[in-house]
Length: 202
Image (cartoon, rainbow, N blue to C red; front, top):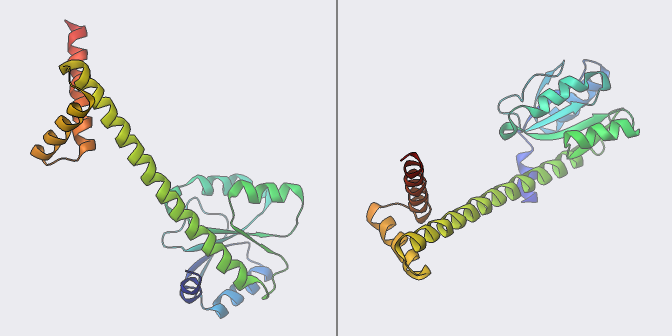
């Protein structure tokens, strides 16, 4: 994956959110030298720019509210975030941690280390994204298992079936209706809740 990340650096869309000064000029020059496509913006935007792969965000204490608003916007579109800082004081480090930056670039901007920081940040971000996908998949799978367990309990209680027979009943109904076991279990749970609601209303 590391080799692929290095290959992909050329052509990455990098969004530089930084005050218009000499430091930004140097940063943009270095990024373009690497081969990145760079766009600049200031002040801090309200949401992530569509299509941005990496955002280099200048940590400015007087823009804290605006930065927090940006970071809360559409987490599904959140790109790789790299903080650009001038100081290593506790309040700045707190902001870096709070904003979830995966790398830090110090001012004054220097060419050395920039490529390394971008490569490592991109690698960590991609690994984190894949881990999040795996966690969500496992959570969905666990929720499905729990629904099937609940549907089995409903059939066992309502029809006097054994656990194995209740499972087989759900499986057969799912096959006949061309549904997944999870969808069939959800339908059984929903039907049972509806019957209970009507029973309470009588």
